[in-house]
Image 1 (tube, rainbow, N blue to C red):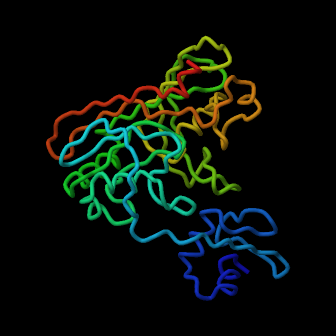
Image 2 (cartoon, one colour):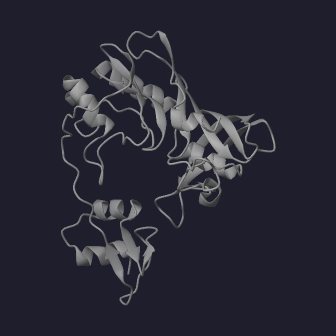
Image 3 (tube, rainbow, N blue to C red):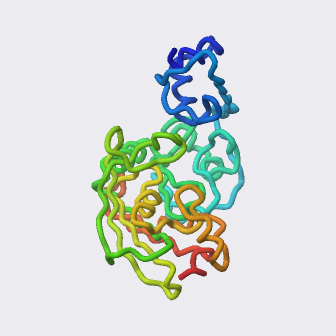
Length: 291
C-alpha cells in the first residue's frame, strides 16, 4: 500500500495535499525513519507515525519589536535583520518574527501580498543576519516579486566565515539543489528533480589559517544555497548545525552560537521609481571576532 493511502485510512479527514505537505515537511516517519515520499510502499506491519504541527494563526499580530531600518519610503523598507529572528510566522514560531515587527512599524502592510506573509518577497534563514527588503505597496510587491523571481535585476552578496581554505581563490558553482533524498529537512546537490543554483564565490584568507572569509554573490536564491555550496567545497560555514562540522566548531574561540552567514550587500532597482539602489549591512559583532 502507498504511504499516503495508509495515512488517509488513519486520518480520513485529511486531504491528499495535506498528507503530501506533512510528508515533505518531515512530519511523517515509517518505522522510526523519516518518510521520503507519499508514494513509498508500506506494509501492514510497518509503524507509521504522523506528527500534527500546531496551526499557524491566519493573521499575524503586530508586535513592538525593535528593527534596524536601513532605508524606507512609501513603497518599501529595507531591514538589517538580526540573527535569530524568523522572517514570518510558522509552526514553532508564531510570534517574535520580522512580520510581527514590521506590522507594528507599518500597520497598513496587512493588505500587501496576503495576510500570512505581508510584504515578504524573499527570506533569510533564522540564524542568517543581514539585508532583507519588504514591500509596502501593491506596485512594489508586484515589482519586487518579479525582480527576485527573475534573479536578473537583483544582486545579493553574502559573507560567510567558513572552515578550511578552498584550493582556488575564487570560483563559480552551478548545479541543481533539491530536497535531500533521505532527510527531507535538508537540502542537497542532486542530479535531477532540483532547481538550478548558482553561487559565485571569492575566498579571503584570515589570520586564523583554519578559516576563510567567503564572499558569495548568488544568481539564484535556493533554500540553504550558500550553506550547501560551501559545504560542497569542503569549507562549511562555521556554526552551521545542519551542513557544518560541529567538532571543528568546538575548537574555535569563541564557539560560534549560530551559522556565520550575513546578507552583506543588496543591489536592486526601485520597483516603482526604477532608480538603482545599493545597500550594505555592517558585519555583526559576533562575526567580527573571527575576522
